[in-house]
Length: 438
Ligand code: FES
Ligand SMILES: [Fe+2]
Image 1 (cartoon, rainbow, N blue to C red):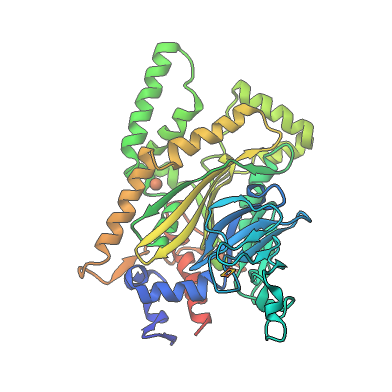
Image 2 (cartoon, rainbow, N blue to C red):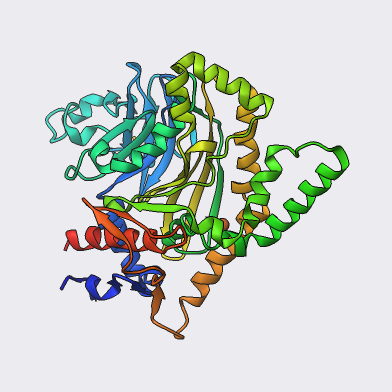
């Protein structure tokens, strides 16, 4: 039994159901920040958000406000957003360029982009005191560990645990698939992102990402309306409708289609939904893009890359990535009942402009706060969070296809696309993180 600050992790999480306190209890939330978000690797941002020396972008890891910065030497750093003098926020802005150094607005201590001291006013006042200029107490504290995988920057506030690549494991495919689809082998962020504060627990958002049962129901009205427009377009013009309509009509796919997909769960809670987006249209834009890819990679490798059939990758507990359409959503929990999501998209370097427009269309039509798709999801998240606070039941059910998953070397494969295996896998990891700090 793991008793943690008045509650018992073993009793909150069972293999096929979890207690509602996991979503609603602020004490559970505080412990999640301490044992999960402050221990695990968390996505900070993409290197292309800080292309030039002096550039910075601020974000959060759990409860900690952090800065991602680019130094004169070209290296990317992740620092706590705190001045070591009297503790002021060093960077109140979201992003910008600090020039040679960060300058605290209170007493003008200055720091290089790696956090080391550049200048302290009336420095001789520190002679014969306990604070020396080269002591760690005088510099801006860096994250205990930081690293980048194919341009995607992560940091951990814990010195212990697996290295970034080992921790990512099978979830590396999110970044490999996205970058490999670029003829130049890398992607570039499109600034800025949408920021949405959801009035619901952060786990509700992540669980929904690989919930392949909900689209045909939650997004039915969008899917049916888009299908009708597609038919009308074809009747009127005799031509195939633009691909962006298909992004929405796909939501009216029948259950059988979603069930034919497969989910794979990896250690540390990461999961993949395979299938669906592997569609390969033969329109002129795609053919032009494929020709550029073949020139860059050779025919065989290009076909291998374009054939990767992944719809969604969940990097637990912080990211939802749709690599074939260069979409990424980062989760920043604010409280048990409030979650900030950052909605980003990327440009494939070296790809024709039309392929970028496709990513932009998906960004606007499906993932942005203004779409019917996202609005319907947000309604469900809010609705679940409201219901979970009622005394009408203690448990949240993840029973669908429970006991039918196959597990080999810690990798779990579901029997159907609509299995609740990904949610069970996320909570298996949650429980391990939460118990580990006890
Ligand atoms: S608090 Fe930053 S210089 Fe004083
Ligand atoms: Fe949805």
